[in-house]
Image 1 (cartoon, rainbow, N blue to C red):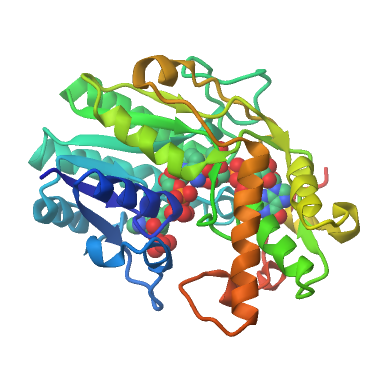
Image 2 (cartoon, rainbow, N blue to C red):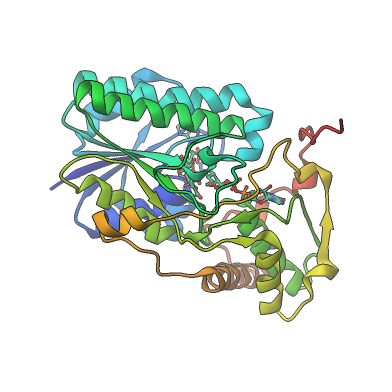
Length: 350
Ligand code: NAP
Ligand code: G4F
């Protein structure tokens, strides 16, 4: 039986990947951080909490990383753990660099020393392209990061390539464009919208505050993207791949689809709040996944409107159930209104 070690198993991708690998017959180990309140809701939501082995690891702590490799004896490591929120990286650039950048090198060094035959997947990102001018982005497009998060990811991305060349490690970078689902964190814009639209449609809220709604993203469906991670590690030799849909849409378009679904006019329920504007934003992303299609046989299936509908239906159902007194594993019921969160770094007026 193959062993997989997933860092960040409590996150969106970690939970879907764990389910995917369990279905393939893997023994799945996942790392989690000690928090004052446990957050295993995604694993519970997918009904797999009892089927995974948990290991306490913080990417700030090299010894916990080494220990997790020794205990799990993995054939494959999927490094999904990161400070993954671009907005927060402007507020905590150092923590983002330590976790999202240096944390990866701690893993690579550990593998080089104690498990050089392990296959390693690194969660790279389309954010590394930055505020670029290209009509689409592929593996050949130049990187020009626009946030502390993207800069940390680019450092990690380059270190994966260096360890591959210098030490022959089987290490791949998946350059994934945005991917969403009902398990997406509430601070990311799609889920922030579907959660709010669900509440508005049920009369629990009146409006939503957002930042730059003209930004364009290439949004796919997360369960399909975790399959691509696995496919990368099944190839004869390691390489880097773009995973995307090649469609791009503005946040406004996402609002339109989501509000249409509940028969409301989005413009009546939106307030633009400076607090959600980033000091620098990535205005446009659209990924070219042709290399993944020809080498991995991977292509996206779920398109934009369907993705918005999947997310919205699940948020409506959850708020409906909650209002009717049902209790279940879920994040939104105790999430603070983001207005309560102070000290957002605003775009500076010059
Ligand atoms: P996510 O839901 O935010 O999950 C991030 C995971 O990292 C969580 O399990 C989190 O644990 C863990 N983590 C954070 N800091 C850590 C630390 N210091 N030590 C150990 N674990 C830590 O992110 P996601 O959407 O699943 O994304 C997975 C990965 O893909 C991330 O690396 C992200 O940057 C990258 N990525 C995501 C997308 C996307 O669109 N989703 C696109 C490209 C790349 P807690 O639960 O304890 O916070
Ligand atoms: O949903 P977002 O926060 O995702 P972002 O910044 O694109 O990052 C996500 O995708 C990356 C892949 O490209 C991952 F690497 C990363 O880990 C993460 O998963 O923001 C999307 C867009 C941005 O342009 C942002 O400025 O939406 C805009 N936006 C407008 N109002 C907002 C809001 N974003 C958030 N989070 N909240 C708003 O109120």
